[in-house]
Length: 354
Image (cartoon, rainbow, N blue to C red; front, side, top):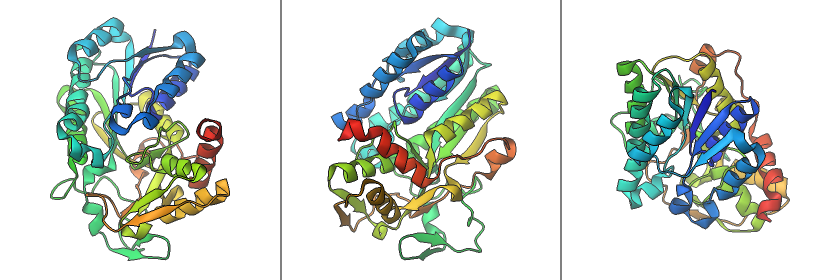
């Protein structure tokens, strides 16, 4: 039996991973104790997604409600499946840089210590397994904000002659900048994943994502940009924009496209790789542009207010250069653009939200 182990398995990327690999015939073991509800409140609970997976996949999906920081529980789980574990997809995290400042200890122990627990068990119990980590572009801190940006009507853009015009690649430094405490905890985890590759020879990869999105996101005010924006538009709830005139730009990658990239890496793994991954120039938008898309799809007007102060460490402009990953895995491609993503979020959640 080949086992795929997924942490954060009821979340956006975790649940997409469960579906993807169960549909391929694998047995998937999930770890998720619904800490997203602890972080962001009842509306961000992932229980609905967990129940949907259990109902659909039956014996193919085995769920464990344990904390990734619990060394004994995690070791018992790894020992249960032992060398049958062929792939670990680590998506569990505290994902908000705003929330991290309110409880730095929990943020760091979940993101950094939890990753260490998983890596140690991989090294000691199933060292031949592939280890994929959901990192973040926040490891680059606020360095992108010092790029030569130009203000346009609805967005900020980078100078067309700049080396990062097609997106920011892995050459950008992660040093000498402000990260937010969330960014620091993810940097620690990211470096651990790289080091377990280089030092112990484990097949690891850190995927530094921009905005990860899709219809299975339990969006909340502090995390889950497109999902929460669409929810507010549909329900007539007020939405708050923080700084940069609402022209801040994000690239957005659909959860399926990201997990499909994971699978390409799994099929032909490398050691201690780092990839910037996101929607690139193929799928990106500013906050104002996203609002216009949501209003057009729902035929409703969003009630939004503007807060002059931006979030600490927030990016003004981020588009990922994904060429390194495409060079390594040329058969992989993005399939969802920003409009297709938002339409799917709307159609698959209208019965649940309205």
